[in-house]
Length: 162
Length: 162
DNA sequence: CGCATATCAGTAATACTGATATTG
DNA sequence: CCAATATCAGTAATACTGATATGC
Image (cartoon, rainbow over the protein chains, first blue to last red):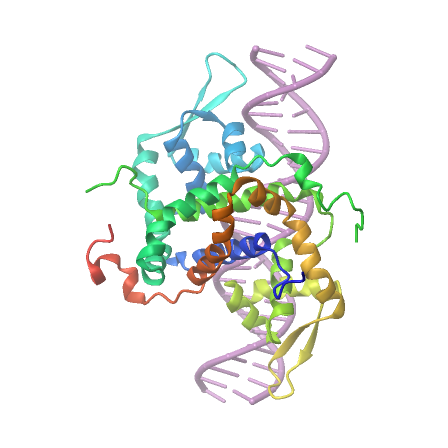
């Protein structure tokens, strides 16, 4: 039963993701635009999706509302997003992309990930390339998975809090 | 022609990775062990690989030596790794796993990633499950890819990238 | 009042740059 | 002297928690 590699695929995936992310960052030096990854990621969602509040965006990106607020503040200062009170609910402030934001986001995202684009071309064969979009969707499905709470207590119940 | 979705797969992959990583973190609250993700990631490499210096580990994980040094300092204080001067080269300090480090790493990594393990089980079908280890290796290959510098100027090499 | 949303303030974890010492 | 390694010091980017105000 004890596999040669005692590590589960989940752990392997988590480690690989972290490592690829680190590599991407370490190779990002060519792009000099002032926008950070988290800012571009939030901006992309603002541009692609319907008008949402800070809290909505925070939920979508799995960070706290206060963290997302920080990110959006920088984007607003840079003129890439604007804020508008929801006329139907005075508590809500909707975040909207500006023309400038819409123009900038795809271009800068492509530039920021130029290394990854090249690595994909260089490293993957035709079959892997063709399968990649499906894999990306799979990762997104995992990110959005609503795992039944019981499944999480699988090994937790047993105690051994180490 | 311009695709329906103007975003490249590379950008999609980068965004998906970041989002999945955020979700994993947001679901990690059940594990109360004092070790952070970056610490566990470094410890894993120390345990799995041959004795390496701080700089070697930094290269392997794509961070700066000073960043890795910080991470390792915490692990050393916790008794999970130890340091030993290289007898052949007085500049080098080798990082070694302690018995405690070897005992702790896989267990805590599994616990820390319990949500992802459950999400994988819940979300993926049999075929996807079977393909997952290959996907993980592919991500590792991308992380370690040595892209020829010329290839970064997308248009030089092989004409338009899309 | 309870709840959701936004926001103010402070903190933690991560990784960076620059500068300096030591060894080969 | 030069290169590699380690280390000291400070900083930036990211995301957290706690507390508070306001609108529904």
